[in-house]
Amino acid sequence: MVTVRDAELHALIAQKLTAAGLESLQANEVANHLVYADLCGIHSHGAVRVEYYAERISKGGVTKHPQISFERTGTSTGIFHGDNGVGQYVANQALEPIVQMVKETGVATVGISKMSHSGTMAYYLEKIAKEGFIGISMCQSDPMVVPYGGRENYFGTNPIGFGIPRSNGVPIIFDMATTVQAWGKILDARSKNKEIPDTWAVDKEGKPTTDPHAVQGLLPIAGPKGYGLMMLVDILAGSLLGLPFGKHVSSMYADLSSPRDLGQFFIVIDPKKFTDIDSFEKRIDTMIDELHAIEPTEGFASVLYPGELSKITYQKNKEEGIAIPAEIIDYLKSDIVHNNQFGGKGAFA
Image (tube, rainbow, N blue to C red; front, side, top):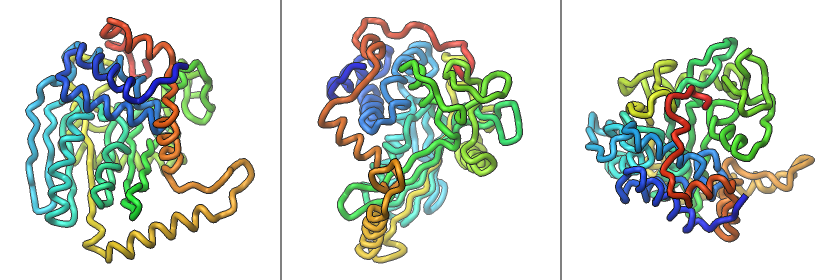
């Protein structure tokens, strides 16, 4: 592992994505996002993704100069058309009309139609929460999950998350896959040559595996409950927007020269339309204080609120630097744009 400062990591990522053909404005936004993920300890959505992005950009699977636009379809509804631009840039651009709409109407329900992989939703939810709004978001991913009771993959990891504003300006941010773990966590385990718990995934025989290289199917969180949630995500972020659904969602690696047509969905609420904002924030603060005051069980130092560990990790990594696998840093510092290792492979490449 190599420890790097966030500014250095940002520069390395932006430089590599620019070399792949992305314009600097977009490359810098993607770098903002990936560094944020690594700072938060969400390494599955950080620098480990750069080479895959670079290969897809180089091979034409991302629209390098997307013609993005916002279509307002109702008082508090709209569709942001992403033209299959790089996901982090498209989703970040969509925040402006979303925030403007919720300021006008109190509620905004907006779908992003046709984008590439957009990374961790926590990044967008934090921005929304810091504007003083409650945010809920969800997005599709390619079919990598064995449905409850089945042996063939159908849905994606289909994450869902929320952001809640607080009086101290540090929002509650929670972002989770509807699988036991996100695929990126397994990629992270691969990069570190670590085994995974046997509750995360199954091999080609449908049996639990601890080998991240043998994974051929992920498992829904809490069995039928996670299965139901991932269906909901797929419907709102896919079918509702007229996009591919379920097993028809494009694979991340199958054809890096073709767009992915992914969708993401936002529900944003102005709490002032429902209650006095001061009392709302006081209730949230009291809730956090009461959670912190609960006596922890064996093996835990304290009770944290959902997503709090990422906040602690962010601050620690901001001060001390981020630990990144040496091979990833070597790649970022090299003159190689990509090693042609992802294209044409299956979902679990």
